[in-house]
Length: 170
Image (cartoon, rainbow, N blue to C red; front, side, top):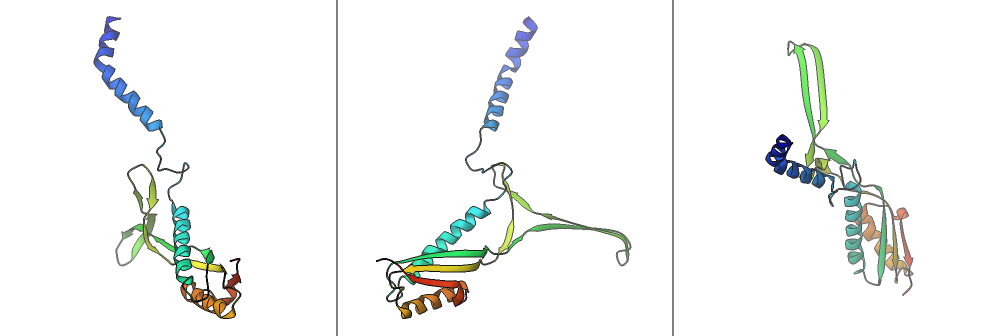
């Protein structure tokens, strides 16, 4: 009994620190999403699209005769993403004519300090739009529809057959 009290007195502080550490590990962090998630790409894409729509709405609303304007863009693709890769090549025998050749490629992952890892993006392509809908108070005027359609064609790369401009309530 005395021996057990001596061990507890001696290592009690360490046991308490270990128990508190274990409890802290069990508390979920606010930055992580669902388990197994390693990226926030869909959220970033949605936010980027919403920001781009707002910017286009502001620009398009300055066209003469447009009035109040609301824009909705749909995506065919959020853009090609190129990830950083680490490649290791091994071969045996003469370097000029190797007997055996092996190549391994891994995607480079980076942590953000909170235990979540995500792939390192080296290049991100532009989004590919599927269609656009514009509702504006001046949408009943042919000249306004043409001007808005031309502007959206330039901004998005969409053909005029993928852009609808309609009149909205005042």
